Image (cartoon, rainbow, N blue to C red; front, side, top):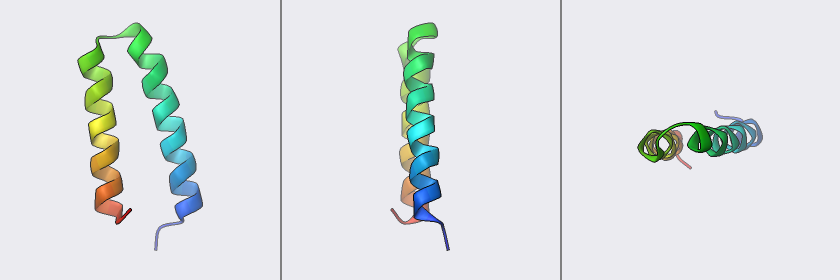
Length: 46
């Protein structure tokens, strides 16, 4: 089973990192990161 609290913390960190990255790199790169995060969440059953 997935520890959902840990998963949410990891996602929060990933979202914050995506926000920082979007200031440095092209938007499509940040968007692809968000899409990958959503795909990961879907695969985890969230």
